[in-house]
Image (cartoon, rainbow, N blue to C red; front, side):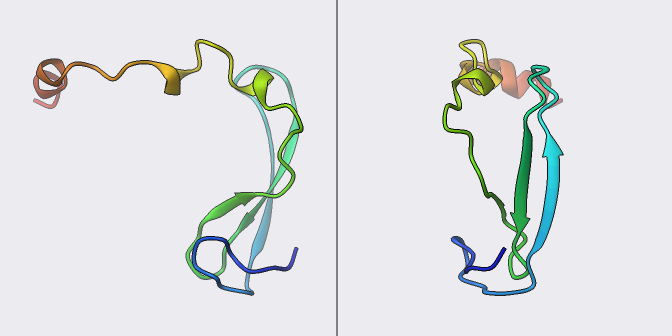
Length: 75
């Protein structure tokens, strides 16, 4: 896949990577482009409906731990 990297503008040396969704068992196949300049990954063909991949209990939606607790766990 040709084209400039959206992050750094590099226009070559890109590598393609194929991956399957494994977290929720949906099995979707995805192709990512790794920028030859900065290493940024770009999803080439995002799903038309991403909702099944981000359910209501998705980990990124959780509130981060309170500052006191996170300080305690750092040791």
